[in-house]
Image (cartoon, rainbow, N blue to C red; front, side, top):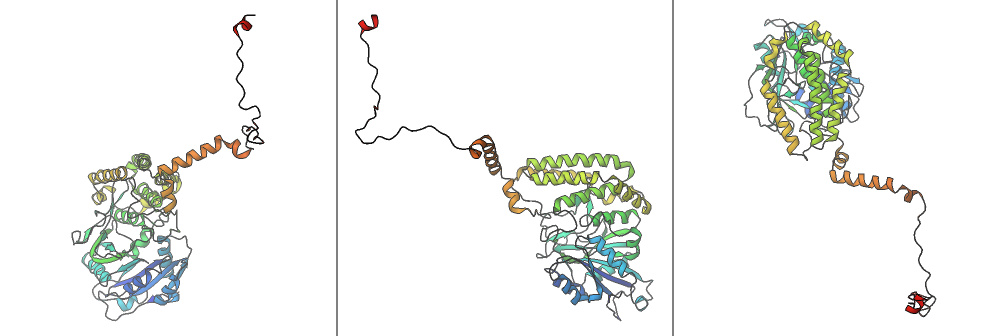
Length: 448
């Protein structure tokens, strides 16, 4: 099978061979911008392949025009991002033109550049990523700074980490503007899969993304495993990429898992924590996960968000009952671990951050009952959810149901009631009405 190979005689940093892998799913809305951004990089990729996961719009046609029909793979609609990337890397396993890109600066390094259909890299993004790769030869996974799709000044992510409870931490406030305050190349626990540059040998050694994480948290799980395997995960703030976050923002339906983004995200977070935590902390982590699920569900109930409470409980239960797959995942991670867990502990958010974030979350849920879901997750039930969670409407519906049950004989039987007196034939016909008062007997009659 051939791939879309782009050959250049005078590439910047020629010892690097880059294969761009783009996964698309109903992405015709963003693809024209994304494809143009990839094909106009200052440092072009050597080849460009794509996977279409059962799109129902014009995605397939856009991909074929951009990279050629032979470089587009078809995948089932329910396939997740990681599985789609694995399909592409397996189909195009051997990079073309390695000899032509070999230089005196060192051995050729084969890279995978992972892209979402709703992510548009800036023209210098790939060049900046490879520049960092030359500056830090030990870097195996390199990520870009993410900005908003419509508002380019809004920061979305500059690397990511986790707190002790599995909550994702980006060190950013909602809607924070980019003034360069988070710039700088540094080691992190994880980088986003949108724009992730990963060495092919590291990708293969780690086995790619975990199939149990089809959409959310695959980046934090992969970064955690890469760090434990002794590889460096670095953020390159010089490389900028715009991201629409279509799945988490509700701009399109989720086909590779439950249609509730909050439930899928929480489920993936718990799996990531339980699959990667050290054996010493596993019992405590399980107890903490169970306790946190009860507390979070209670907060949702108090905040009049019953659907979120139910999703929280379902996410917790769905992970805890999958003991055999979870143990198998832990064995696979133990086999590739090269350094002790304590050596990557500094990459996690400190405990104070976790408590502060949980306090802010609890305060928001208790004080702002009418608030919709987080900015990163929207509920696709919309109108139905708003109606059912209105206390007044719920009370009226309950009273109607109780009344119908109590008076079911009225609804199911024949109505009965008192009879009226017959109407008089004429105005003078009194029919003995009103009845005459009883005559009073004389005293002599009563005594006789």
